[in-house]
Length: 291
Image (cartoon, rainbow, N blue to C red; front, side, top):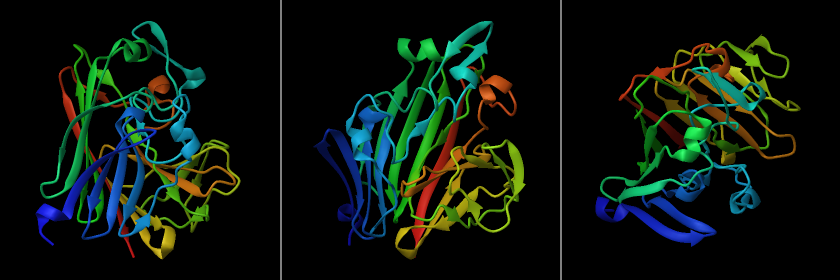
């Protein structure tokens, strides 16, 4: 199959405008909804759908989408009391930040050597009320050789250093909540009792309400059993220092989430990354599936 006909970007309507990236040779497709926080709502690799999606939350414009791969910016997780203080002022911000609940602009698409969609989010009066920094995010979602890549550019348009810790929140389909993860992390922080625990075999999420965070991985890769007997492989840039695991009892998914910093880092300032005025940080996350 020629490269010209292998890759395709299809636009269609399903409650919102959707863009589906297609790789015909590997039977792969990724669907993105720019209007709903630029979320990828579906990720089929080599014929297997990896993502869980609660369609009711996707179709409800007031709901946080339960499923797909929400974008987390400028924070991952929660703030203490939903608030933080910066430069003598207090701000309220929702869990996981401002990017996942706002429409992103479509910049371009491409079918040249990959199927890709580039989207952009810029700060505005609404974001500045929650997070007092001017920014621009430009993400390229790309499907190439049966792998899903998210190339990210975070730009600080403010005249001072900008604190942020971005991440992703992919919901992976699984009935088993007690998976064995291929990772070189040896311990995790259990947010259910705030204890640090060793990783010895499966990480048991069954019954847990809160998440757990893998703490000391040096390799920016994690793999775990996926649906249909294959293995999901996540790789990510060095800035993503942690992987957070979360589930909901009775729902067939586990979230495996690359984060730049831990919960409430904007409150504690512990390990809080900052981007210099006028600076750009470029990162990448990739999802693969091997049988």
